Length: 465
Image 1 (cartoon, rainbow, N blue to C red):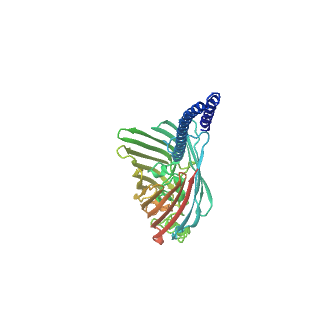
Image 2 (image 1 turned 180 degrees about the vertical axis):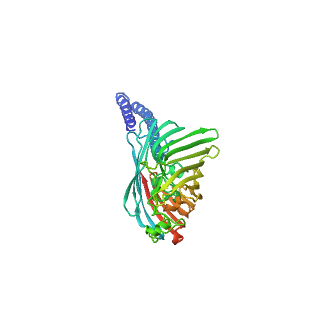
Image 3 (image 1 turned 90 degrees about the horizontal axis):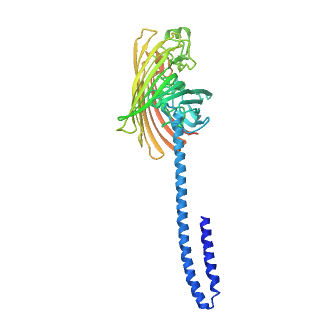
C-alpha cells in the first residue's frame, strides 16, 4: 500500500505548488491569500478522500491475506486427511496426490506396567518401550494401476528388532465397484483389521482387541492373506453397499509342542512348568504362519465381507463376514482342522461418537481325528466420544474357545479370556497422538495353572509422517 501513499503525497505536493506559485504573481496580496486558502481547503479535502480510499484498500488487502491464510490451512488439512485415507490401503481409497514414489510412515514409543504372572505367558513387561516403525509406499502409475508396500520394524518381547513385509499388493481398478489386488494384504474380515494397520497413530485406542491381534502378537485369526482380493463399493438410493471376496494361501500353525499329552510325557518334549497342558493335552505354543511363499501341502483360504451404509443413518455401517480354510500344524499328531468362521459387525463413526463392535462364531471340524465339530465364539465392542482434541473410550472383549478343538489347543493364544479396557486419546496435532490405557484381563485355560487375572497400564506417544 506504500504505492498509494506515494500517490497521495505527490498529489498533495503538486496541488500545493500548483496553487502556491501563481498566487505570488497576483498584484493584490490579500486576494492571493484568500485564493490560496480556498484552494488549500480543496486540496486537503481531496487528500482526505484519497487517504480514506487507501485505508479501504489496505483493509481489503488484509482481508485477502486472511482468506489466503485460511485457504492454506484448509489445503494443509485436506492433504493430511488424504494422506490418512491413502495409508489405509483399502481398495477404494483415494490417491494422496503424491507423485513419483511417495514414502510415509508411523512410529510410536511408550511406557508399560503389566501385572501378568503365570507359568504359560510368564511375567508381563515393565518400563519404557519402543513400538513399531512402519514405512509404507504407494507408487502411482495410472488411475487404473495401484500398489501398496508396507514394511514394519517391530521390537519383540526379548527386545530384538524384527523386520516384516506386512503388505505387498498390486492392483487394477476396473471401476470403483471392482478393484482387484494380488499379493499380501490385510484379511478383510470385520472393520478393524482393514481400517487400522500397523501405524499406531491412526488407531483410536492404544491396543488392538486381543482376539484380532496380528499373528506374531498372538492373534487367533489370520490377519494377513496372500492371494487374490476383489473389492468395491456402489451407491444406491437406500445407501452405499460394499463387498470383499478373497482367495489365498491357507495358514499353518508352526512352533507347536511335541504333540499330544501322551507323546509329550513319554518323550519329555516340553516342561509343564513352562508350558502348562491344555484340556486337549497340548502345550499351546504355536503361532500362525501365513505361508506367503506358498507351501508343499497347499491349502486354500476363502472368505467374504459384505456391508451396507444406510442413507437414513449417516456414519452407520452394518456388515457380515465369513472365512473358511484348512489348517495343518507341525505337532507330532499333524492335526488338520477345517476352520469355519461366520459373524457380523457394526460401526458408527458419526461425530462425536466412535462405535465399533465385531462378533466371530467358529464351527471347526477335526479332519485328521475323530473329535468331530467344535463350537467357539469371540467378540468385542468399543465406544469412544470426542471432546475437541480428547477422546475417552472403553472396550470389552471376550473369547470362549473350545480346548478340545485342535486349532485353538495348539495356539499359544488360543485360550479363553475376558478383558475390559479404558483409555483416553489426546490429539497433539493432526499427526501426533498421546494415549493412556488401563486394562484388566482374566486369562483362562492355563492348564495346571488354572487362570490368571491381572491389570496392565500403558502410555503411548505416536506420530505419522
